[in-house]
Each structure stands twice: as C-alpha cells, then as structure tokens.
Length: 84
Image (cartoon, rainbow, N blue to C red; front, side, top):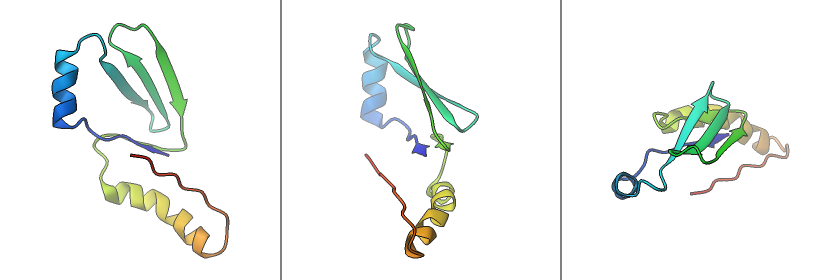
C-alpha cells in the first residue's frame, strides 16, 4: 500500500519557483501511481495493492491496515514498512 501526502508549504513554494523539476504524481483507480515531470522527460508507474491519495485521512489507512495487525497478533507473518 502507498499513502501520498499533500505537499508541505515550503515544498509548494519550491515547486512553484523551480520550473525545471516539478514532479507530478497521479493515482490510477486506487492501485497505481504514475510519476512524471512537467516536461514529460520521463514517466514511471508503480502498482500497489491500494493507493491512498492526498485526501485520505488516518482512519482510511487504519481501516485497510488493521486486519494485518490482527493477523500479526494471531501469529501470522506480516510485514509493514513505514517510511517518511
């Protein structure tokens, strides 16, 4: 799963000033991300089981992840990596 966060204020300011590097991330049916720059010099797509957009709240993520937590407590192998 992947959760996107909105840009922070200092990131928004930098992106509006720096027109050379202005990455754009779009979601596709809540299962894929497409990352590309504004000059279309490159494009990369990543697929996930679930993608949470910038509008997702913590409760949305918890509802999806909580069954894995229960499985871990029941003794099953589970891997959750959190970055950022």
